[in-house]
Length: 209
Image 1 (cartoon, helix red, strand yellow):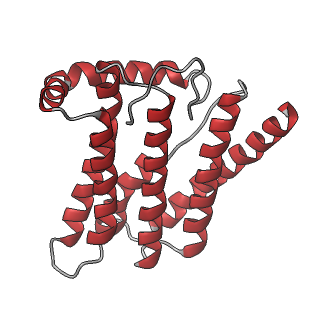
Image 2 (image 1 turned 60 degrees about the vertical axis):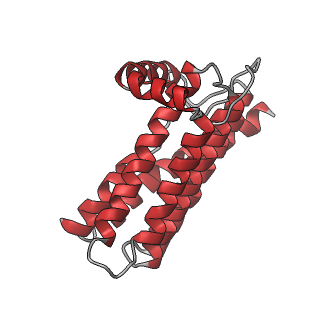
């Protein structure tokens, strides 16, 4: 998460009420990873570094998944897991070092959304998911994130939101090793929810302007 001076207004992608849950989760991760966070500080590792490493790990999944050697897929899933873990501790590190802010939140969200896009396109390319549900999932996911930021800046945050990327990531190995073909149904389900939130988000923004 990029460093930032404190801003007067906080712009986030979280719905009303979710921020308190996020703060609680951040506090729990802070306690759990405090020795590691202190080591990062001692070694000069910043939230920016973790965001970059998280992004590169997620990107590594895309380049590794389709390789022909027999450990390619396990390594790819390991890199995706590393992306999620690093993404989960850059926030606590930013708060520990007093560098949390809108710029860092925006950078982190952009990085997350790029990995959602790249991983989805990777699975479409290798035929793991169909192009229509994959493309619609990606489109409405991006739209919801953009609308969430706009609504937050207009002081009309969503009452609730769904950001299913972690569930979808967790289903990747399930699709490959256990239940082939099920990921498409999961994407259709989440796409329907994201499409609804996109519609309501557009209506609220237009009404506010």
